[in-house]
Length: 333
Image (cartoon, rainbow, N blue to C red; front, side, top):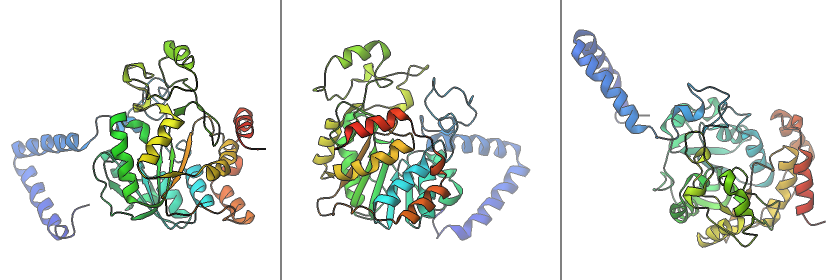
């Protein structure tokens, strides 16, 4: 969206360019080339339209980074919005790595003042209907376009693993800057997890190296070297994942950035993730700032919970028995 000061001028500028393009073929060709080059300059090499499935064979997801199809259902946005709504008493939220804003849309429907930011210009320009006007371009490796402490809660769902390890500390510091109270992340991780099911190396390291990594034992924290990361058919790290490390490694990074891990809240959430069949996909981290209280349990009434689960079609999700077993075994009896 253009700055407000320029908006009155845009119709006249647009009309003038249209007249020029109609009258002078050479000018039209130049404008077409300029438009394409400007779009390429603003677009991201990895997270462009093809990453979100545009112009792609919908069956190739297992061989190429990106989504088989990208919508509110396949992105698990309803489960993410529900998780935040059910467990946190907050008003303002920011979803970092929001893509086209399905989580933002879900949180808005649940009464929150939700904002999203992403490094993909394509995603920001193709927002979900309920996220229109709520998405802002931003780069977590630089300074996000928000004030310090602007948000009660920030989510970074399947996002931080896309950063190289050397960038992670600065990125977490930036998340700490914009977060007033809570941070919720899901990050592909491996090894023991003191607050829920652990993670594994499958589809995180190259297949021929998986046994070698498993033999390293629970003391190994990573991050996995770039050359050992699992690859897609084009030889690139699968899904653009660049940092694969243990729960312990990530916890230390969060603590260094000034966060406190909320294991009690994670243990509350894990049974819901198992019910929704997400335990195998989402390695959960719930963090708070040092002066923020641990969220109280039972913030929503059973009737409210049942209503949102019905509205978001979460009551029809089929749990994976293996997910349920792993969560039950990981939680205190």
